[in-house]
Image (tube, helix red, strand yellow):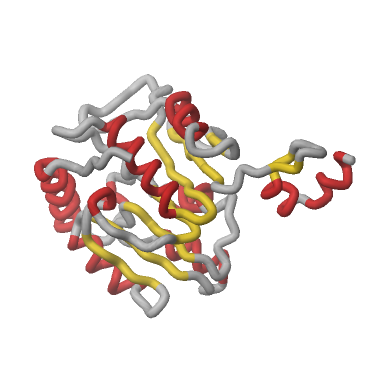
Length: 233
C-alpha cells in the first residue's frame, strides 16, 4: 500500500481549528462541528453491526472519546479502547472523562502512526472537513485500507453524502457509490446504511467474507442468524 499522510499544513489547520473551537465552546458537540447534537445517534449506528463485548476498539479521530458512552452501555464496560486524534486539547478532555486501564488515548496522525491490531475500528466525522493541501478522496481511501489491515473483524465509518442540495465551503461530501466500490476491493461482505439521516451514510466492511457454499450465505451472517441456515436447506 502506498504510504500517504496528511501534510503538515493540513495537520496544523485541523488541530488549530478544533483547539480554537474548544476554547470557544468547551465540551460541546459544537466544538466538533456537530451543531445539532446527534452524535450519539451516529455512534449507535456505527456500533449496530458488531458485538463489542471483550473486544478491542480503535476510534480514529476520537475527539472527546464519547464513543465510550455507547460502548460502555453495550458491553457493561467489558471492552478495550484506543482513541487517536490530532488535537491535544480534545484528548486532554477525553482522558479526564474516560481514561482508565481499559481506555487510553494517543496523539497523532492515524496514517503516520504504528498502531496495534484491534478487533474493530470506528471513525465518525473524520472525512467531513475539506483538506487545504491533500486530496480528500486519497485520504479517505488510505484510511480505509489501513484500518482494514489493522482490524481483525471489521470497521465502521460515517460520511457526509454528496446527495445534498447544500454544501459549506469547508466541508467534503463523499460519494456513496465510490465508497461502496472501494469497500468491495477489501471484502465481499459489506454494508452501506443511508436510512437514518438523509445527508449522511455509514459504511461497514466485515473482514470475514467466507460463505457456506451449500447455501451461499456468509458464515458471519449464519453465526448471527442460525435460523437462516435451517430455512435455507
